[in-house]
Length: 102
Image (cartoon, rainbow, N blue to C red; front, side, top):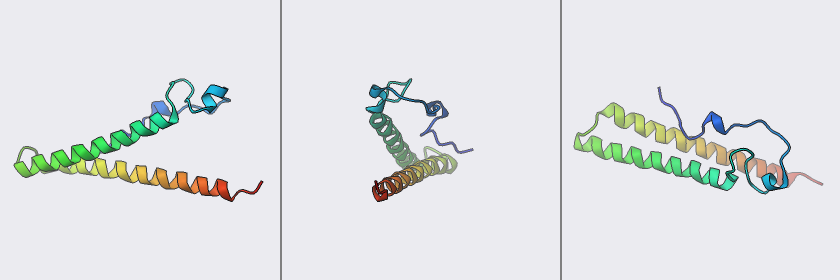
């Protein structure tokens, strides 16, 4: 079973009224800003892509089996696709906000 470890369920928190500090970019409870959370997620995607590349090179050298290399490759692909879809949804939301008339 292939799992994507980019987004964990522990990061999901119920919506609540936030203080001024929380509205400035800090996630309530974790102390981590949205920017750093996004950066960590992108770094994990990049790490999975690097791991897939390393596994592919090891497969060529005969150090790992094809199934290990393919699983690593598919995990990286799924992470990249998820990241792309999240980016597309954020852009759509931004465009929708910009079309809103006040």
